[in-house]
Amino acid sequence: MSTSQLPAPSRAEQAAAGAMVGSDERMARVAWALVLEIAAERPGHDRGRLVAEVESLGHVEAWHRLVGGDLPRSASARARVADVDVDAELLRAEKIGSRILVPGDREWPSALDHPLLAPHLLYVRGSARLDEVTARSVAVVGSRASTGYGEAVARDIGSGLAGRGWSVASGLAYGIDGAAHLGALTGEGSCLAVLPCGPDQVYPQGHQRLADAVLERGLIITEQPCGRTAQRHRFLSRNRLIAGLSRTVVVVEAGLRSGSLNTAGWALRLGVPVAAVPGPVTSMASAGCHDWIMRDKARLVSDADDVIALAATVGDPHVLDIEVVEKLGPARPADALGQQERRLHDLLTPRKERTVGQLATELSLPVHEVLAHLGTMSLDGWAVQSEVGWRRGTGPTSGEVR
Image (cartoon, rainbow, N blue to C red; front, side):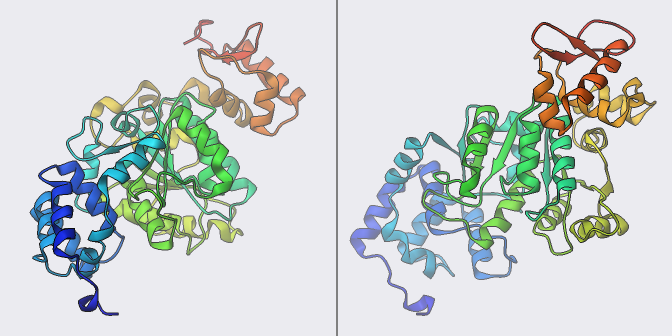
């Protein structure tokens, strides 16, 4: 059936749809979210032109024109008007503990106002504020078909970022995304997971426990209404939000055709710096990273310090913290630590003790090796032991905990 043959709403349905929204911007945006997806398509397509028309007219005016049949290229959306029940959608969101954000709300990030992003709304689950979580957010993405090397690097970067108060944004997928979220949960920062489906679902379902853990420390967001399932075009739309809400996009492991490079592509279009982690030269799993580095589309990074140095050059100067300034200038004393000791240093936090068993599990090292490293670090003040475990020290200059 062509769009011209799609059934239009009856007069009664038109009246009900108009009254349902009235002059309320939030209600209008919910209604539009139910009939028109902002898909990652070329602006020249009818869907893209209709999205531009809605943005130009405003959601309230555009809705009433849609209902009345006075909006061009809108037959497909108008055919869905009769099925729209904004009150029911608000109730569904409330039942799952999701709030709906629209432009003008206090926690709406200004980055979302970019014309390439501009979602109708966002469904947000979690107690943190979205604007605060995204103020210092880094996206860590990569292949679902990841290697042990890639997952270890993603966990280390996620942990290092979170340990310095940065948020880690990703897509909750298997592979690199999940590893980055897990790493972030060991630090003191927060997580941001962006879904390609409705807020009443978790995709993939096997990451339900991970999603629950993310909610305890951060947020899960989506622009898709309740009931929508994950489909290919929704992953592409999801990727633009991950890129737009981050100060830097880090690709840890990606083949030449990896979907994570779509996220990196969105970052370039949005003016967000892109970084990539090199892998073994023989690994096709890192071929996409190598290609982007070789063509100067991505900055080579190897750890969280490299990422922070890149992310902190974006936006207002207040994001520069002391560790970043030291990274950009003279070498820090902590740079003298060995590789495993630096990983331990990243996992330790100033105020919360970690047991040797916990640290050994995170690093995939034998307990006796972890104890040996901690003993060496404690001599120089990089680690401090208490009755319940170990926490981060300030280094050779002082025995106090920072």
